[in-house]
Amino acid sequence: MLDLKEYYEGFFNNSVDAILVINDNTFIHYNDAVLKMFGYENDEFKGLHPADISPEFQPDGQKSYKKAEWMILLAIKNGQNRFEWVHTKKDGTNFYCEVLLIPVIEKTINIYAVVRDITEKKEREFEIQKLNEDRAFVLENIDVFLYRYNQQGIIQYISPSVKKITGYEYYEWKSSYLKYLTDSPLNNDVDKNIYQVLSEKKQVNYNIEIFKKDGSRVVLNLDEKPYFNENNKLDGVLGVAKDITEELKIEGKVYYAQKMETLSSLASGFTHEVNNSLAILKGNIDLIKENLSDLNVFEQLSERFSFVDKSMNRILEMIERLLILSKKYDDKKQKIELNSFILSITEDLKKVFTKNINIEVNLLEEECFVFVSHYHITQLFLSILVNSYNLMTVIKETQKTQIGNIKIKLDKVSLNDTDYWEIKISDDVKNGYNHLDIDSLKKIIEHENGKLYIELDQKNIFKIYLPIYSSEAIENKKAIDLLSYDAKNKTILIIDDELLIVKTASEILKNFSFNVMFSLNGIDGLKLYEQNKEDISLVILDMDMPKMDGREVFYKLKKLSKNIKIIVSSGYRDDKRVLEITRQDGVGFIPKPYSMKLFIQEITKLLES
Image 1 (cartoon, rainbow, N blue to C red):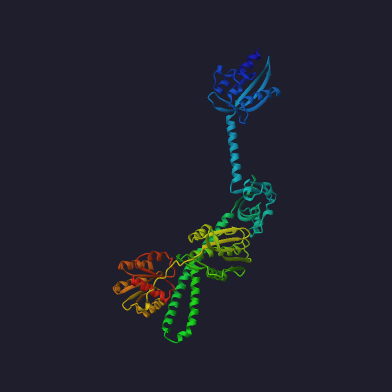
Image 2: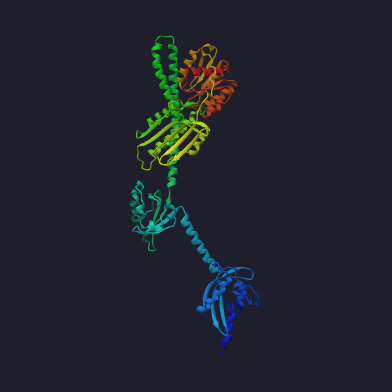
């Protein structure tokens, strides 16, 4: 008969599990599996405390020594104790294990411990935990939220990121998201889209607008598709919701920028044509006045001519604004009177703004001069005023035109011991300058040695400060005496594709005794110059012509004669071609439309240089 003691000792020694006997909190007996697990020699292991083969602290933060003794006490109290533990091998490697303590009363209380290495199991658990944590993090922080609802429209799942996007908790959204829908037309087809995905089993993509928890509006793009169970029966709808509010704003700004660029191109082309017509008109009026100067009739017509001059000057002011919109205008500084400037620009805008928008102007009785770029200051004013108009009309979310007020007040102030003219522009819009590039506006005003302050509260308030102009910055140069200038032996070549402009300019030149040749295109003009270059004193060259533009003609003329004198004629000086050419020696510039006096002065000045 097998001895029971021998049986248990054989089981103890041959077990694949590490088995230890603990007495008085130290190891007194153990099998070979223990030595193999921990990497110790036989004599090294006896007498060790469980904490001696453990890191100082367990994963829960408790010290291994105190926790080991507590685990032994619990085993004695409860009859056994099973728990997880981290042990340390002789080489310093930590590993996870599962420990079962069973107290056995012999002569004293011995604790039998069975230790199993569960490192692989714990690593898999950690991996799963990490995946779940990563998944939770992603679902909380992604820029979309996922959802699922059944055939009755009841939401069964929403990812945690719903709070980040809408501000609502899961249970708030699940109760009924329909109550968060705004009055936007985007929401008119919600039922129709849900019907399509549920009844027609189609994937649908549509936008809705909801109120966020903070009361603001957000546009969500919903991409929904039906999902089916294992029996291929419709089980509900899966959806992804994305916040596209900012995307729509950017699209709106891009559209706005494209629209303004289109208007810019139209303004540029339009002003070129108008300037040509004005050049013809103004030149002929000057010729008529010149021819009538010795007649009694001139006195009777002088008042009518003054009316024509005033009208033409007004047209020129409007053309100047169009050129600024088209970004083709000279930015040189000049003396400007602010009362007149503000009145002029607001009168222009009143004609294009709807009558629902009221512009109130409060000016000063004294003259208020500044020395600035007309281009920059007009650009600044138009940007602010048009932005206010847009925010009060078509750019409002309601798309409804409303009554609005824009107020402009001119005043004199002192900032840091420097005197400024203060131009205060306010409107009825709260916190709104969506389409304004504030940095660009500040750069403009800094370029003019001024300041720009913006206040946003119940209204938009823009305060523009421009230094007061107190002394003459430009000296009048002595003009050439046109009457005494001898032009009989001077021949002018005109190259311009506008026949009426050529005829008008020819008449003016002939009236001052110049000889005139002309061509209606660049190719013929080059031939004409090459054939008569010894006789031609100066060339008047238009920039915009068919077949060959003014820039190309210019450089071909320079090849024919290095010392040639050329006057460029164009409706806008800020044309890149004009700027490039006028930087060179022997080149003048006459803006269209030009007066007879300015026309002849520029020609004689260049001929005399």
